[in-house]
Amino acid sequence: MMASSGPWFDMYLSARDSIVLNFNPFVAFIPDPKSEYNDQLTRATNMTVSAIRFLKTLRAGLLEPEVFHLNPAKSDTDTFKRLIRFVPSSLSWYGAYLVNAYPLDMSQYFRLFNSTRLPKPIRDELFTNEKARHLLVLRKGHFYVFDVLDQDGNIVGASEIQAHLKYILSDSSPAPEFPLAYLTTENRDVWAELRQKLASGGNEESLRKVDSAVFCLCLDDFPIKDLVHLSHNMLHGDGANRWFDKSFNLIIAKDGTAAIHFEHAWGDGVAVLRFLNEVFKDSTQAPAVTPQSQPARTDSSVAVQKLNFKLNDALKTGISTAKEKFDATVKTLTVDLIQFQRGGKEFLKKQKLSPDSVAQLAFQMAFLRQYGQTVATYESCSTAAFKHGRTETIRPASIFTKRCSQAFVREPSKHSAGELQQMMTECSTYHSQLTKEAAMGQGFDRHLFALRYLAAAKGIALPELYLDPAYGQINHNILSTSTLNSPVVNIGGFAPVVPDGFGIGYAVHDNWIGCNVSSYPGRNAREFLQCVEKALEDIFDAIEGKCIKT
Image (cartoon, rainbow, N blue to C red):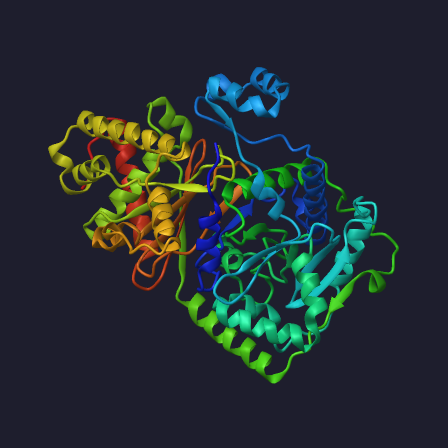
């Protein structure tokens, strides 16, 4: 089963808006359970080594495939895993089909490392150079590179990596007056033109080092104050210490708080989450260095190369303009979050309710309470059960959620707890059906997207459907939602996809529900979250047979 992902790559790569806020999300790690390992140098060394171990496992073809379980009780078992291992790959899909578990497409993974998005006029390009052996490190807006793999492809000693990172952390030169990284926050056509100037001005080789680096490690010089500060820092930061075009930036703050910020054209949350889980597990269970480890006695001033960029007046002006635009834009973004402690997955599953459907219902109820209407809602769902599959949309706003939301918000006194429970069960059943359809390629969004793409490619006049205001409205996603479930994820987030929207990153944990919301001046994230909290309280009250407070 093959999905055509070409048009989807085109959609991302042809977009001309800045990739910061408009496309790139972040996912943050929980702290290392052993607190002394959260020292910045220790954690940066351990995570870097673990990331390179992942790269080596991936390239050796030893990464166990991800599996999507439609019925986890039957297939997420050791017996199934043993069985599927011995089936030839051409037939393993059939074996999986029998138990409703689909090995997921791994084709995105090769773009995880040594990759970047190159700005080009009209349509950007994805660039990968697997031969490169160096790491790119950003600190205070300065660029450094050093090898993390030797000529034979072995990982450079952890104590050497630690020594080089220590050397970079002790560089006392002031931040550059014109930090180059701001250019990656620009409109893509503007950046493409400036990059041309940069390359022809004697910076070709330095740029190639940046583009081909295994990944970009960003070392920040300040601790993280709270979760809101964490979201702002990992989603956009001050713009000087990230290379936003890189397939991912591993960001580590002064207090060891770590996150992955990633470019979205090359891949989706599933690939990044797998990487994040493995890096956390490896760096905490088999750390390469301890807080007591001594860095190698090596001359880092020779091994570490600081990249110097020659900037003419046009480039300096370009950087200043980019900085002004970036600063003005991020000022308008609000981020806020809640952690609902009354229960989570365990409690909801006992009630035979889909945890995801409950979270989505709460968003519908919240928006209805705040703005008095139901709006276009988007939930992303991976279609990696298909070869080259990317995502499909789940449309969580339905006649069921609308009816249920109105009952809770407008007329709670008219309905018994039993009636409300019944409505929630209907929402849950329908939402689960939509999720399965989306995961199995039976959604309508990508289908319509592909037909529109084909019409344009063949020079056919745009079919009337696409000119219908309803089509415009359903693709103006005021509620854009995405969930990533993992015990090692502290929080994740992204900006709204439309100026009058909310960006809702959420997770239903075993015993609590986390929700991280962003908004621009047209909407109020804080108020929306208060409505989400009220909605969840009402839902839990109804489940427990209590009266709903108006």
